[in-house]
Length: 102
Image (cartoon, helix red, strand yellow):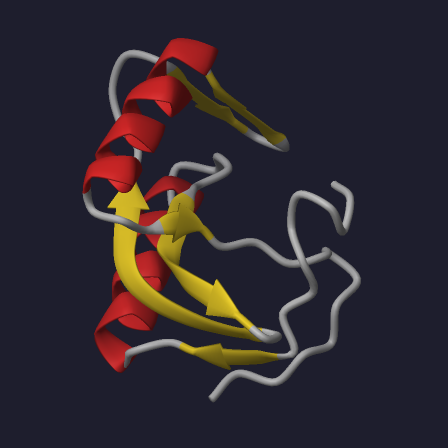
């Protein structure tokens, strides 16, 4: 990931419900010993991110195993189309980021 595609997020605004849903979704896969995924979508501006949507991926197009996660490109394209329709973007941060959650 580069800063050009994913600008640094210094402050996160995550509703309790989004955080709880994300943890619940990933725990479901974790109980089976597999990687889990919950994608955060929302708005990002001036170093702040506001999460408005959580996308849980299951079924065809997602492969989850121990220490392995694959999202097929066609599925990510479909998720992107829905995000565009809702005027939100995938919000990510550097894996080495130590930014605070608000």
